[in-house]
Length: 114
Length: 114
Image (cartoon, rainbow over all chains, first blue to last red; front, side, top):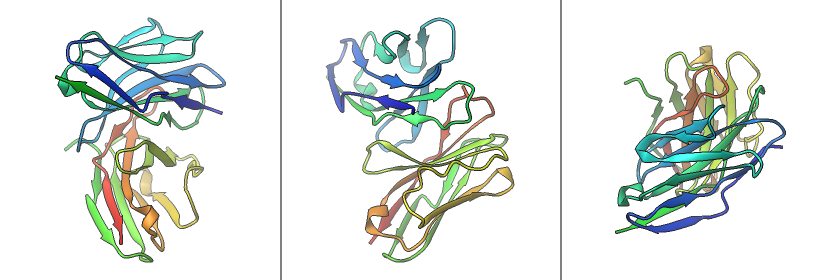
């Protein structure tokens, strides 16, 4: 069975500091991996995805994520946090070559203090 | 607009009444998902349509919930005999063909059951 874990309900970071939002997954095959963001009172938006190739994926708003197959992780990172990055972040996984649905993690609330 | 649209944006109903929520996906998108989100929490998968395949209904919480997708486009989620615990934001998402393609989310329908 597929599953995605976001072990931290909340991450607090000072503006200007680097941030990491953790995601680990468990799938029976090779995954496609996604990050989505939900800003307050706004819809969910796609941030970035890993399909194949370079393990470091760059996305919107200066975010990046690193696919680590041995650790089955796909942590979201940003070198310098902005207050405007404060939002709810979701990791998602889908098994390749399957008709299965996308599975979302439980979400991590990122709070950036000025 | 070219995005996913949902209607109504807000729905207040009395316990025991039936409600219908509508989703218009992006034109040409073959995959359509319904999720439920309570109070800015995680996404609860409800149902997944992919082209002409049988839908994945594994997330529907009870037989009071049903969904259909007509002509491979518009989808309607129906909740019969609503209960207070059905109160949540119902999100629809669509994606183009290709298992690695990201989802585009609608703004959601906020359902309140009194």
